[in-house]
Length: 324
Image 1: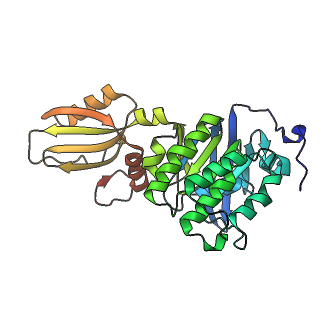
Image 2: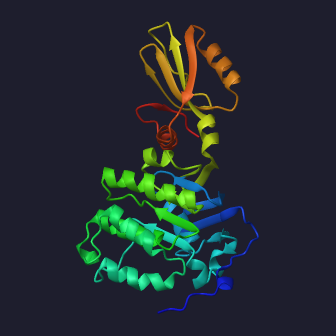
């Protein structure tokens, strides 16, 4: 059995106690391709932080740099105040990581894996491990190679959560989970993380579930950070604009105004996802654009709406889109 590290060994730098993760000017290249380009963001301590973006945006690369699996080509990352390259084994007992592609020792049973891991983590919570095993209905006597894809992910999550990490990085953790288990995981395990004050950084395409829990959102596209902001700011900044007109020949402005992300025409109505900096000014501009408008209204856009709009912006597909 491995000796538990002394409390002093678990202390990290307190240079930035309000930030769990600090990413400063990070670039990572694969050959001549920038998977990440000059990315800077801060993950507040105790937050549930969603890292969003289309496939190939650089989300997994950024998470792998944050846990030390990859070294940035340029820039730096600090986790709990300590530069990633200086993290010791004792430090890493406070950091959890689970990914869709993660491999577990297939020849072990789940019980054997837990017995092997528990002594390595001073904060391993056997009661939490038992509760998660019951929640996921996992048989501890079965060998991991007999687990389904969903059960494999559940086992990985159990092993990442049982040590009660201060920071937990999750890369597409819901892959392979059925709807009921996914919902149980999101509403149960991640809510527990929030209540305990853990910091969770999660990259996922399951936006409907995430929207209920995240309090901070960052969006990557083509390796570049588009924004990183609190959820309430995102909700106020991106809204649906609806313009009802009295004409049958209503058309979209061409090109779309800079504030319009995407737009479509449905009958005598124009509907657009817009960036709102000043609602009264935007309303006035729309009234001038559509002088026959009988109604101009704004309503909240969902996280899924914003994701789809930004991911498709500039592609020129079925709905009109403004190129950056």
